[in-house]
Image 1: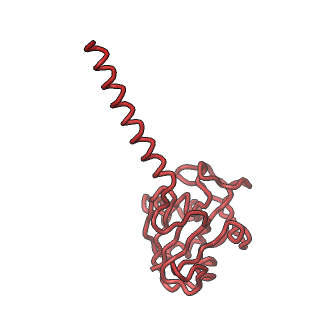
Image 2: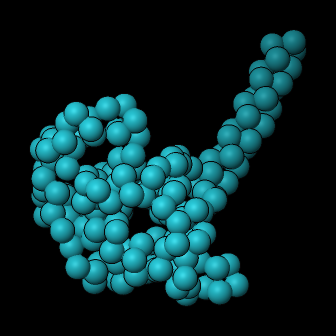
Length: 178
C-alpha cells in the first residue's frame, strides 16, 4: 500500500511539473520582446519622424515592404558562418527612410537579446540587414529572418572583436532609435 501511495504522489508531482513547464514554454513562444511586435517583420521606434502606427509612435515594416527595398551584398564570414554572400538593405537607408533623428541604436532580437550600438559606427562599414545568405532566405532557425551584417573580413582590426561580434544580431525584429 505504501508503494502505491509513493507512486501516486510522484505521479502527481510529475504532472504538476509538466503542466508548469508546458505553460511556461507556451508563454515564451507567444511573448514578443520589448521593441518588437507580433506579425510585424521589423519594428522601428524612438526618435523617428515617419511612423505607420502613430498610437505607438513606431514604423511597422511588413515583410513585403522590407523585401522590396534596394539591396546590397556583404561577402564575409562570422564567428558562426563560413564566408558567405549576405544580401539586404543598407541600415543607413532604412534609418533615412523613417527619418531617424538619433544615432544611438538598440538592436532587439526575437530571443530578447538586445545590444546598444552607435548607428554611425555601423553606417561607416556599410552594415546591411541581411534577409538571405548565399541566395537562400534566412529563417528563424538559420539566423533570420533578419541578420545584422557588415564586412567583418574587410575590416578585421576594427570589426573582428568580441564587441563587434555582439553587433551581429540575428533574428532582428526591432530597432530603437535614441
